[in-house]
Length: 366
Image (cartoon, rainbow, N blue to C red; front, side, top):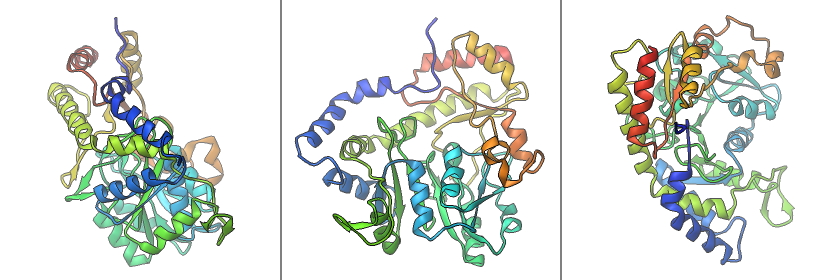
């Protein structure tokens, strides 16, 4: 029986390979491999897609978060509020600046930051809030920004999983001081390796970020401040520039797949993804919930259907972050969710007959 993957890029590659190889040839024949015209154009076009003025291409989504934090002066002794139901890079970026992550619990319906808990987490060391637009939909950004203004805090959107998602008609990445995107291959807009971008409307932050990604330099061999080596290369930018033209097509395909799941599984005892009424979801992941999650995953695997768990271990309980002092029970919704959620196959080229098979096998297990 043919395997059904959680994610696979091969069909997209086969469909787009002429464009991809054309993008590669353009770069290799240009004589410029680092920070050339392809990076500049991709920064401009992606920023325009997000509805902001500036983009800065960097090495990865993690670096996009780290450099965003450094650009606003986050340092040792500061605290940054986020969630523990996220990928490790969100927290790794905070810790890498020397700052301390402070977690708030999640909304059990959307699995996103519970903004009603934000104010209780703020203290004199708090400098920034990182709302994570997880799985493909946005946090309640009006509430986040209102609280941030009240306390004089910066806001950085973690948009690694939300390219093209909208909140009250505004694109993810357009509602904060800075926003960080990842172009890791699995993403809604994915490349064929690592890559990331920071977008902003703030020209001063834009100029500083361009220095920070290149050793603090504005011209070769002269550093104005301590910086880093985090540059999106020309090859990846060229490929992503081609793929950006297809981003809305990818999102449409994901929504069609999600709607099939929704219709076929609505009368079962599985909890399906909930989209907040102010959001348009892009379904980076299709995340379900069931108390017998592990049994279901095991049975589907026997039937050659692969699923995932995003994320099985809340970050506040991981060994690597025990020093933060959190314990089991501190984030009850995050912890309960982590034991029940799982992701069904979701990628634009998932075939309808494959999805029907996933649905049929899943229905027999519920």
